[in-house]
Length: 78
Image 1 (tube, rainbow, N blue to C red):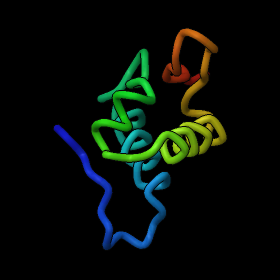
Image 2 (cartoon, rainbow, N blue to C red):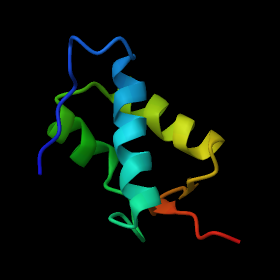
Image 3 (cartoon, rainbow, N blue to C red):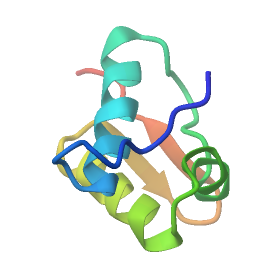
């Protein structure tokens, strides 16, 4: 399913992306490796900084962690 940024949504585009991914993570739909920045940029037609900011939000929420050079991964519950 391709998701898009809703221009009528009052949330910032990065927040919409973060919320979509968070929903997929908490529902169990997304496990393991998170789609790459490039994949998400293409899916959402978004800029690099928008996707990077969405990743930052997910890291702050404790939902993902990033390994430089390898990608971002869903954080397993403790």
